[in-house]
Image (tube, rainbow, N blue to C red; front, side, top):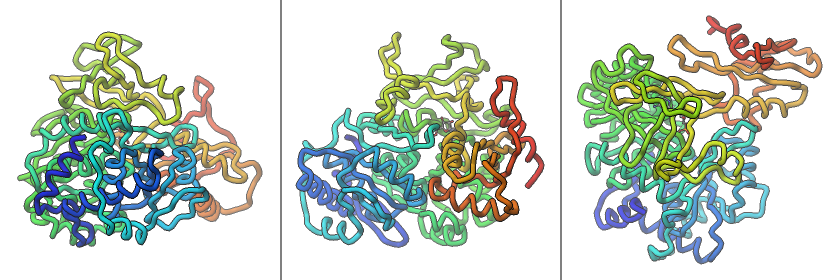
Length: 503
Ligand code: AMP
């Protein structure tokens, strides 16, 4: 695996792999701690290669645990600290790990070995070496990421070592320099973090962490970034939009910054324009990709007039090794400007959904023409002058502040709450189509006699037991009946329209 080999070679240098709230972890320490963790896993669980679950935010030991799992031939399953206990328990029940590394102090009601910070300290302090023969190999899963699933239960997406190698080969030519410092703000449970965790480490870069608390307090975040010597910014456009609201977010804050890399959601002209004014020395790279095809599969440096006249900037061209195709009604779309569903083919396409052959069969395929493995994205795109443009989804999946959400996931979880007969969740969008917030429309089993404010507070508290904060609708409204569209389905557009123009 490229990244494990690269880690070994950088471990011979004095480079720093991670800076987390002032704490520094060198490549030597990352290599030694991950070896020690791998040796412990191999000795404790021997032939049993069950995945290792890691729950947390951006703790310094998170990274050695990831690399330790890979060196011991195991996949890891990251669960973000914002995921509520019930949802984390569902993931653990599906994955059946033997060990859970927990930085959050949760209760895992199952028979697994729980490792907390003190246990890791002990493990890291007993040196161990692990032969590369124990490392994960091409077809082994490296990680399983759980994304929002339409049944109300998170859906697991395994990605192999071979997929990750293909991703690194495809994106690294866009990285402007070896070494340097990369922003590590994206959660480990969102694969865009791979731009730092895999590509960054493969290039000997320093990962500069911004955890949830820092991201929520921009003054604190900027004070830390000022000392970061950041050269590469990786985030969703939403996080950069939040930063741009402050005048401090300017080249004087990050004088060494050479590149923005965006992924995960629509990148608007407005943000690109603002960044080119504030950071004239930095280039902007837009990239696109679904978790199922390993982090990202397209890239383009956004320049000047690119994409003027279209709603957002282009998502770019296929990275090296990836083939893209547009299809409509089973036929390939060839003409410029004609919209079709984007199909991804090649070595970054993962093996399918974890334990869900039914879902895998629907979206993954082997291409008859080329023999390549393919994935139907559900994303509608068109091509113009050799560049792909994104123009929305063919289903109910959406992005809110960079988070991938299936509306049915929220509805299924709201319907678990007492006195809720039926729930319909609709996105409320702004003028350029970006989702501003979610609204839930609820049919009660019987009147509850509560004021709207009291009801909303109570329901949000109950929903937080099942859903992470970013999936809890901002507005919860009671309806007597649902409007239906011509197909007899709940008319979500009509529901969302009731909120247009409201703050
Ligand atoms: P995720 O699996 O969380 O990475 O989400 C993948 C989905 O995010 C894609 O299928 C798209 O719908 C959306 N997405 C990712 N990157 C972009 C982008 N650059 N522009 C527009 N949508 C994007």
